[in-house]
Image (cartoon, rainbow, N blue to C red; front, side, top):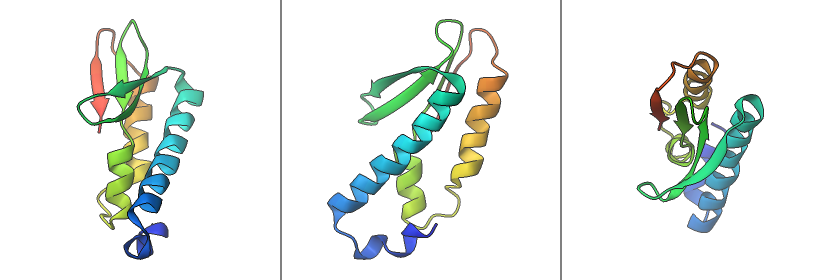
Length: 101
């Protein structure tokens, strides 16, 4: 939220670096809590964390969510977003295949 006040004044490469830094932090919080593996999501051209394989797949993409929040969109609530992912990862259904975007 604080960074969104300054994004308009930042060069695009710095904004992208901030997106990657904050998005990677969210990934690592999830990986440390639930394990999983990182993959590349070709359709979104960004990394994705997938937990629970092979019994189930619960995946999270963070860069777009962070980018949206930095642009000032309060609907891109990072704690709420992560909580949805974490709740599903704690209570997985066998065979489920879910992607949090």
